[in-house]
Image (spheres, rainbow, N blue to C red):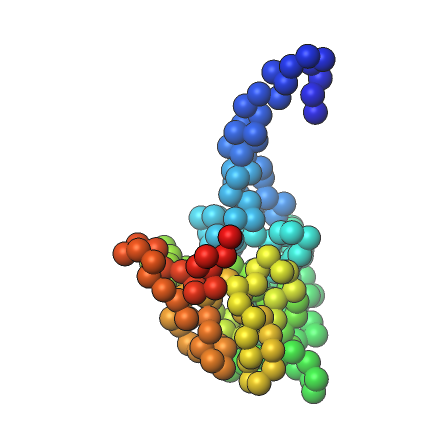
Length: 208
């Protein structure tokens, strides 16, 4: 907001300052993260909790709850929900996990259990291995990366394609990664090297 009547000097350089200022994340042991790194589609917490991506564009990824250990507020990332282990008081994150007919569901990578795939578990930023952030996903929730499909947040959508013969969305985190096939037509990996260091999806070429 401009307070000077004839200039904008009171607002000069504020944008840069705000981007570099730190904010403490809400959990009791939440990290202090630069504002400019919040909701930038990357996990920027040293503990790989990805709490900096918990609430973005009005959508929640993962959940907050009271710790089963001491009752303090903790953040549970999507891959730890419905994993069969109680982290929250009363096992809150393990409630309503059984998949029923008609539910959007998937088979967990660990254990293979069929679980109900809730909105808070879908299309969040994957946790990449620190030494290979571009290609290898460390924390995969579902077999065939089902959690990276049918995104609620339009800003997370990478491509629209048929999945099991139904039109759905695939998150931008799966595009050009050459992982397991998600789209029936493998559209998420139809990419081009426009320069030796620029690898983009074909739909992103000449899209201005």
